[in-house]
Length: 77
Figure (cartoon, rainbow, N blue to C red):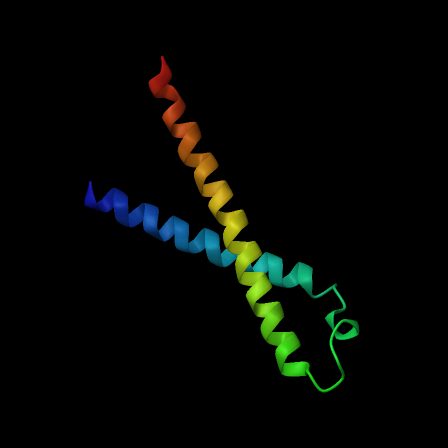
């Protein structure tokens, strides 16, 4: 039981990291410098980090929930 929880925790951590990295790569194509003022480079980068974490974590949660729900479907029958 505890080993299963540890395995699930590692899968969740790996999923979050993978989706955050994928989101970071995708957001590199967005030109945030046109939205911000010239002297606000730090704020633009910090916003990009926050957006990356939010989107990556949300997508990761979706896939983790989807996997969990598909494993619980067998209890319907």
